[in-house]
Amino acid sequence: MTMNATLFGQAIWFAIFVWFCWKFVWPPIITALEERKQKIAEGLSSADRAERDLELAQEKASKNLREAKEKAAEIIEQAKKRSDAIVEEARDKARTEGDRLVARAHDEIEQEMNRAREELRQEVSKLALKGASMVLEREVDEKAHEQMLKQLATEL
Image (cartoon, helix red, strand yellow):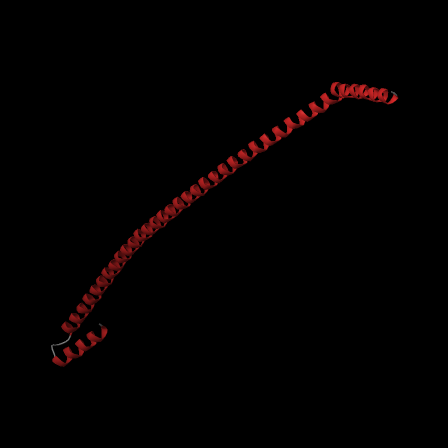
């Protein structure tokens, strides 16, 4: 009977121990496990959200990068067109200025030629008058005339 009483006593103490564990030990462990389970689930859902957000951010960044590249290419193209227009405008201005300078130079050359012709006419008329006066001062002699004409030719 002592063994039965010991066994019965151990069963009672085991039952009290189970009840004590069930009442005081098990609820905090279950609560801690539930909290941990909830934190893990939140962490996983946060990781999934962060992964989706990262993918969206990468897509947005790549979209912004493409747009920036397109805009840069457009700006470069506009700059090239503008530089071509400026170069063409400068060529036109230079061509116009060159034509104007050539025309002015032609006018100056023409004026200079007219001045030179006028001076030559005046010289020729002076020489003709000088020659005529020499002829009239001397007597009419063919040899003398010939000599005067040679002299006049050398002066011309």
